[in-house]
Image 1 (tube, rainbow, N blue to C red):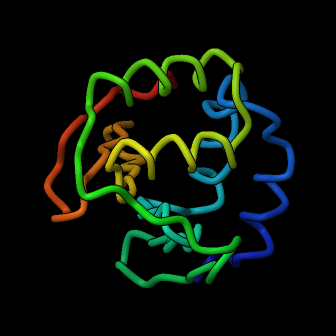
Image 2: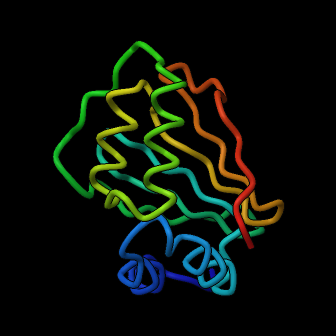
Length: 130
């Protein structure tokens, strides 16, 4: 495994808002991350390399209750605000939980971020600026 959680955390520290996200993605891609899966309930994120080996961050914050009701339209509004730098990461996670988003998968090969609901059904896929 080429990267560690410490390497990833060092890159994540540079992110101040959603506007910094594309640079973060390029940095962790350079470390050897192929994709990752983030869970809103406690912030645990699992990072994978091309051999499907992984490392996890573990819990990052107190548990958020993810709504069983998906409100995709409201989530899209909050997501856009976050991407423009209008909210910090914790606010974004709370917005996800309130709108029924359980987490997301980031594929660094095709540069997509796919959000999923409580049933782990993909509900929104977006192209990430490279």
